[in-house]
Length: 555
Image 1 (cartoon, rainbow, N blue to C red):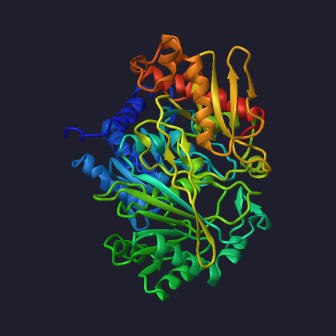
Image 2 (image 1 turned 90 degrees about the horizontal axis):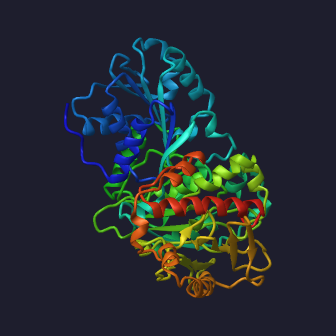
Image 3 (image 1 turned 45 degrees about the vertical axis):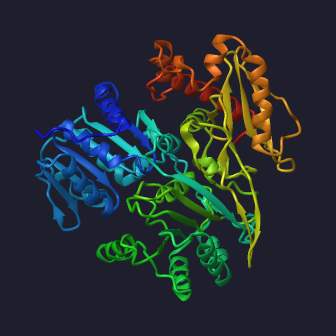
């Protein structure tokens, strides 16, 4: 057998966890941000298992990409494909389209020992559950591993119905910090569309109404002019509201002399592959789409994402932004331009809400029975978006600076957020930040009052399990709130043990995870990190998020 290829540390950790837990957790979930190399992780799991196995995906690109990547990891692998006219059921490792597999399951005669489900947030659909149930009946000891960047679903269906435990997780912020993804820069453009008049359907904005409001000559020209003025000729992907919107936006780009083409799900695979190949070569500068390039599209040259589709779906936003974050020579960052509309009555997903982990918040939602519909019905005020310029040699608190620029149709708000230098170890929450003081924590959270925007400092006392606001009038900026909070920390952190908690460079934080920490993490079904400091932050983050959600300070 060929020696295993060199993997990044977190890829090795994910694979090791699969086999360490394979006898006690038979339905495992791996959450890894877009660009983490989920196909590499899956391929190495298949190589080490070395038994009859299925890799299941729902798109042509994903099926073929997995087969190709597996042969890079394991050149002598016996790999086949089940899709369309291809039906290589006798192969040891089969990369399958779920739509083809569901009609050919009985043709696989050997016992299947491992199933890997790519983009497994789709795994609760009836087609996937039919496949899972069939092979489980044939082999009750079957190991099922799901991999995804986005475990949340807009329809509210729970992945816990398929998977028992998250065994490994690495988020976007971690990958940027480690240098495996490029930094993000964000800009938001006011289109003048009033989103409060657009209804919500299945947890997100109604696509027909979005298209009617956003697919107009004025907005399409605005998108193109913004691209020309701000994107510096970057290779760009535009996410649209409908197929017709994608077609007409591409035509508008061409009318301005910019090479552009749309792709959609009705195209033949060969035609779509040809367009994307020309795009990767730079012959096409902009490709427009709707729900086609969110998954399975890997073009590291992309450095600009145009969100011409407002969304309440974190999953959709994460996947769209992820298209531009892969490393490429001389590529410094990914520019995300969000044409989001001009109202905050609906919850909009922004860059701020996708950086860092939200798994702890989702665990709390499941425990409390909060659905996506419950969330989308609430009013959320979030004016701050983030970019990760420099972020992130450490996980620091973010501060926004804004400069309004006059344009022909709109005002462009620059939201390139820089971390404020700090010696303290700020811990990103799903919304906001916290710092662990041992007996409690200080939290920086956006104001929930739409009439009084800004940032509040909340003090959490562990012993009393209580939390209270320290400034009823919000600080106008995150930087102001951070400065005040750090004054309070300076006054408190006099003793050695306290400095070990609050200073990000404290040596003690690099010690191995303590047994009591590991026990608590496993009880909460949270991933077990490598160090004591990471474990403390994860547990602290979970508890604070639970309390903030309970009091509806965040939603």
